[in-house]
Amino acid sequence: MSVLVCFHAHPDDEVFITGGVMRQAADAGHRVVVVTATDGALGEFPEGLLAEGESLADRRRRELEESTSVLGAHRVVLLHYADSGMAGTPENANPAAFCNADVEEAAARLAAILVEESADVLTVYDPNGGYGHPDHVQVHHVGVRAAEIAGVPHVYEAAVSRDHIRRLMAANPEWSEDAQPPDLDSFGLPEEDITTVVDVSAAMGAKRAAMHAHATQVGDFGPFLQMPEEQLRAAFGQEWFRRRGAPAGLAETALPL
Image (cartoon, rainbow, N blue to C red; front, side):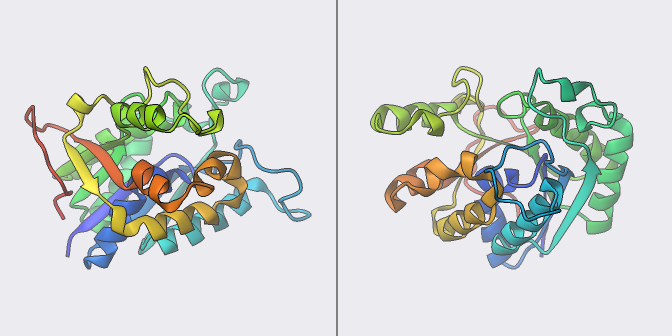
């Protein structure tokens, strides 16, 4: 049995870019651990969704538990840093925000989990955090440093192939603006930088169910949940990674689990 640890910024991030590999790793008998840096308390959510007295952080924690259960996670750890908000917002200046956390301190906390779990593979994000969100960028820095401290042998930057997204948009002009990434010129990674493309089409039922679990994030997931199965599979039936330290031109079809 191998141990896969997926490090994410907020509840719901686990679904899009690692949900398939998590489910497939669990189905193959491996241990799957999810570590989430923040509580997601600054996310947008539909008016009237929260119960009286219910905080968004509490609701998103429960959604995370449901989602990760569907995706096969054996353990979920929340580091409880404050959500930093989108880039350029006033919340970025909060001293308690994850984007302002001391990298060595945060990495030591994550490294302790990696050592405890004897992690074989750690997923983080690419240096731009996919689309520049301060918490996602910090996941990259903290995750890479934690892997160094803990001696994790395999570190993968989870990303999205921007070229794949461009092809999908060109082939599906009816897709709404809501379903498009913020800026395709900086979103994800170009194909030439991706070392590992995993076919997760067999896990699409679990990925869709995990999306449904995050009811507060319907603004993000809604356009995709309305897609026919064929389009959803085309959009999310692969998951992309860049293996840190890999030789140029590496073409893997699985994580080393």
